[in-house]
Length: 257
Ligand code: IPD
Ligand code: CA
Image (cartoon, rainbow, N blue to C red; front, side, top):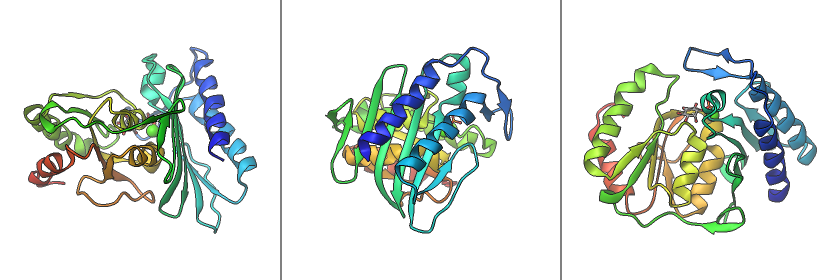
């Protein structure tokens, strides 16, 4: 099943690469929240391909038209994570596909077609990038590179987000905001970054990355240090094991978390 899901993610990635400049951009909830023809087209494509792979599993994707089944197996899909980057030609977007059995993450696949980088993991079997094992870094908090997202669809979280980023500048080496939560989380899984946080993400943004990061030896939880819940929106905190406690202590000092 893992190999077949990887193949589907690669096919979807090819559609991203071949996309025409005319992307038919629409606003969803606000001017911060965009969707293109390709987000919908790729989600439909992935849904059909996954259905033929595992008919019994239900399907949840960012662009609606979800299906449910009673057996607890669920595909959670973001057809394009980093839609704003895709629209603006920033070449940092990915396809994200996860398979969960209830709350247990079984398979995570994140594919960045621009760099031809495929991150994947299966529960209990470690994580890999293009077939080679990846591991969290052993960088300490003072040297840590912190990746974060701005929860752009929730203006009420902007102040908190930037207070944490400001505090991280005193505690760590530097911060990055690169526009795809799934790829940011995979960076931490691969030891390129050391910490990721975002005050609110939807399950399709983090479901696959969380499995990959956990299998790579990262600590993965919400910003209160509690287990992640893929049934609803959640804050997300991913860290190597050395930075986990000091960064959680920073988060706990902030009253609104
Ligand atoms: C967004 C990206 C972004 C994050 C947002 C997500 P989308 O997903 O992952 O980095 O900050 O919270 O919604 O809309 O590009 O699929
Ligand atoms: Ca997304």
